[in-house]
Length: 309
Image (tube, rainbow, N blue to C red; front, top):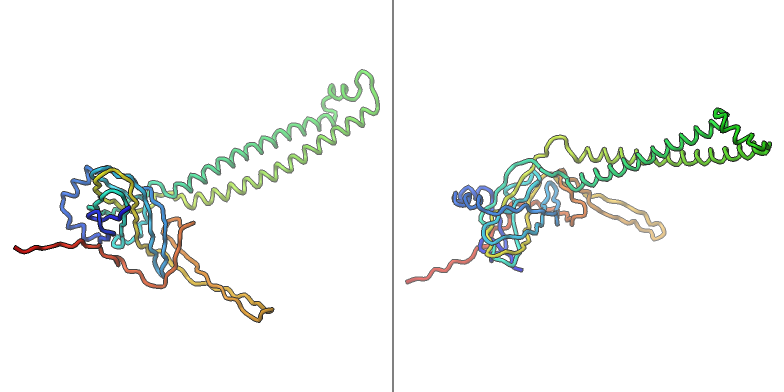
């Protein structure tokens, strides 16, 4: 694997947005002919500073020979355009011709989480409907048995109690049967009602969470597009990094007294807050006390050799 940049040999691309104003209109015509690839990227690393954060994403894409346009959609609208950097690794020689940033609207905000919540709510709806049906069946059974006990069904009552050979102990057997069945039904109703209450509570919690992460209005976002050329088909790893301002962290301390050892144990941890709209759960996280500088790593330049004569 070799890292690539403009000439397929260098290690890194870091270009302020203003630089692209100088690029020839020929690049625009190239981009219209390029194969467009929607990059499915994931956050791999976040470094949180005191008032901002550096976010690193990884996208694995398959490039076709010739021109390719790789698009990173649904990025935070607050990202600093001039902080964008791109690094890549691949087996083919790749040149990065252009980088563009555009404001747009997120097409799939929190897609995976929204899909998971919606499927879970549907599953709960099915369980709620089944529980309500069980309660209806229990109610029907209960009414029938109560009608027998009240003698409202005279024909059934006569057949059970009197019969062709009436016996007084039939009363006791019938009452025992009715009592046992009504008790069983009451227990089943109680258990089903408790389960139904839990299901509805869980559904209400998930519905509230779904409404929080699924805004009624489209969420504004940014779209980063890379124009690349590749000498042959192959998979490359693209690392996209950018700064966002809506992040911070604060130190927190806990004290624990150890009287038997005559010591005090001090523990320190960081409380992180961010409002970028990105999901940082399960991401490698670093805390820093330094102040970031956008564009701290300039592109590596290849040497030019001038011969005389």
